[in-house]
Amino acid sequence: MFERVLVANRGEIAVRIIRACKELGIETVAIYSEADQDALHVRLADAAVCVGPGPVSRSYLNIPNIISAALIAEVDALHPGYGMLSERAQFAEICETHGIKFIGPSSATIELMGDKAQAKQTMRDAGVPVVPGGDGVVADEAQAIAVAEEIGYPVLIKAAAGGGGRGMRVAHSRAELSRLLVPAQAEAEASFGRPDVYIEKLLDNPRHIEVQVFADEHGHVVHLGERECSLQRRHQKVLEEAPAPRISDDLRRRMGEMSVRGARHVGYVGAGTMEYLVDSSGRFYFMEMNTRIQVEHTVTEMVTGLDLVKEQILVAAGEELSFTQEDVVIRGHALQCRINAEDPDRDFIPSPGTIRFYHAPGGPGVRVDSAAFTGCVVPPFYDSLLAKLVCHGPTREAAIARMLAALDEFFIEGVATTIPFHRRLLNDEAFRQALLSTRFLEQYMTGGTDGVRTT
Image (cartoon, rainbow, N blue to C red; front, side):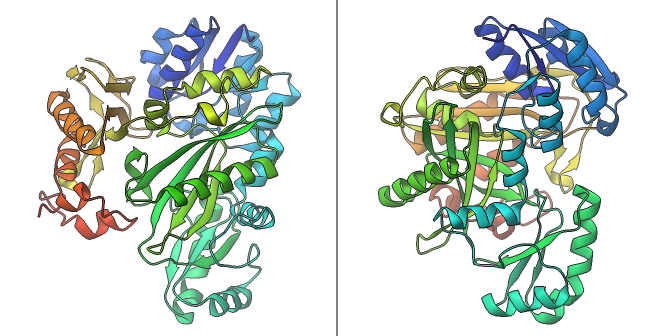
């Protein structure tokens, strides 16, 4: 087992990792920026090293400084969390060359699955259904048009190395494709350092369903059920739940089996997520694989009773998975609301500042993952996530009722938050009926102060 782990992240996920390490008897070393010197993850770690000024590019993405911190602290391993450098193959490779165990898959696997076009072809080779589209990156406009006209409009232009909607454009015709291709390539290069894009079919009103997979170094690969992640705003998830409502047991079984097949095909090790689009006919298509722990891993933990972060650490240390596929039993229903420092009445503009008062809800089936506290500063440099409010109940209806009660008990003063937005969302009749798709918020948000339409 590791003796000391460097936590190469910040905020709630850094706190989450530190807690898991404490339970395993592992010392932790936090990194922090000058803007985060009083942050909770710094206070909870056994040691902490400043890696640069506030801007993320000069601190939490500063690979030389982070590796130097790891070497000075003489850590055995490094946990990247999510976001930041968690899916940067070069970072994982540098850790490997310096004898630091990267808690995640190998750099080769990260690189393979990080290229969306290459990942799609790899899953096609494994027999996993993929969204119709080209075989890889398009070389020029002529090739893009040829692919689009073969699969039919509308199509998506997508960044091969990207995510989060950056480098993505929708084209409904040949003229639109010609006009949007270069801007998409430019945004892809600005965001990810590569202009490569590929073309795939735009599905009509699909759902975004993802399957949690886990694998160890001894050939064991399992899935932990699926999550509903369709509620997105600007391609960023807002609310997640497990299990996904309104899908058949047969579809659930097939998605799980295909996810295990795909993970096994690439020799995956650690926690990963297979993401799919599901159409109205119940057909599912591989979209991408996230080679890290997800923000929404909490809902899977709540319905399975497993600690995924501890399991990540144990697997990285060479141990076998502590459970088999037969041990994975889904119990009840869980929802997660992302509480962001954003003003939903002003088009979700970020709201940095000082939290004057902070009170988190509690009670049976209520979990709050957060690094916020009264008096803490929310810097302008980072993601606006303040807390993840997770509620579990015996049924979806019970989990929603518990979530609404918890939202009423969650007090954050000094910065604007998305708590009022979540209250409106959970009271929406279409949401209650689980009539979900990736266009749900686009269709049901009326804008201004009205938030989500209530029927």
